Amino acid sequence: MPKLTSAEVDELLMEPGLLARIGTTDADGMPRVLPLWFIVEGRTLYFTPREPAVIWRNIVRDPRIGISIDEETPPYRKLTIQGTVTITHPPGEDDQWREMYRRIAGRYTPQNWADRYVEDTDDQPRALCALDLDAPGTKVSTWRMPVRGEDPRGIWATRYYLPGTKMRET
Image (tube, rainbow, N blue to C red; front, side, top):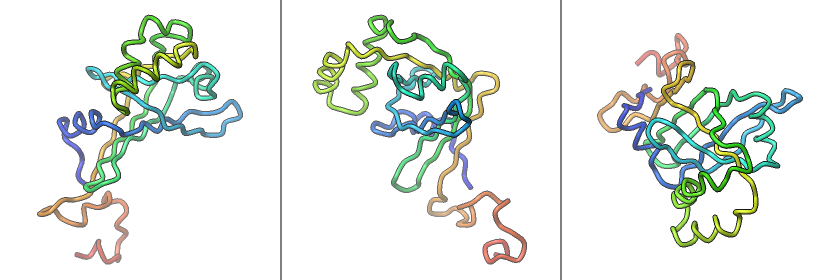
């Protein structure tokens, strides 16, 4: 199972339109996953839950999260992150980081639409959450499908090829 290089990770994180599927834990212990827009600046991933969102309450209660980012076309690059969120700005401080929100929206929509969206929703408080990809305790895992010239058995991690199975024997 080929891992992504640092350059490939950076490229994947900059790919427009990919969503961050962010996992938190509800108060009753049930997992919750929510797809959100995000942006990476430097080595920090930012996302913006709204104040009434369950994911926001979950982060306030327990800032540990899991994130999955992947693409739908070959070679199906995938990235997962486990880490602890830092609340850069709680809801109500939106004016201090509105330009970043404009940049986030601009990753997913034409800029004129993003500007309008930000202006039309500026009365809905959001938090700005950050996850430092290089922080101690943050775990980043990556993989992709093998490409031409690579061993096709690389489709899975070796632990999945049980003794006696067809792919293990080749």
